[in-house]
Amino acid sequence: MEIEKFSQELKAAMDKAIAHTQGEFSSLHTGKASPAMVENLVADTYGSAMRIREIAAITTPDPRTIQIQPWDKSSVQPIEKAILAANIGLTPVAQGTLIRCSIPEMSGERRKELVKIANAMAEEGRIAIRSIRRDTLEIFKKLQKDGAIGEDDLKRIEKDVQKLTDNANGEIQKLFEAKEKDLLQV
Image (tube, rainbow, N blue to C red):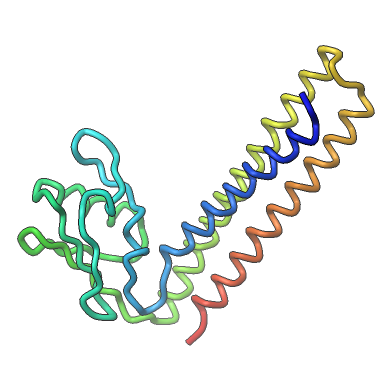
């Protein structure tokens, strides 16, 4: 296995984890309604887990309301459950075949609650990064045990992997700090 190629694959996997965390942060908004707040939530419908954007039209008729119109009325209840389970501070209200979510006024307490949610999302990203690091190091330790690479190579690789891990965690921290600043702005 070519170490340089593996390093690029490792960086790509970590970048994917960072992008996922950034996407999670996009579901947290202050004050203004956005389809991004609910479009990636997963609802159990049609016998499988599907994103809300795949089973409904999502609009914002006014700055404080998200309106979801499922293409099949049997999807109304699973969409409601998905929004409630996501714990993003929205309470869905079904009105026939429409689901409306009013964006609550942002109190100081609500802002702090959203920061806690963002922190949990950032921690999930850090956990994903550590998992990638652990899996990578296990592969190289097995290669070293099998005699494919030397102990010095393993130490160098461990140092490189840790450097990539630290960079990725730093990137997630920067994203979190920016989101925290955005959420706490009055």
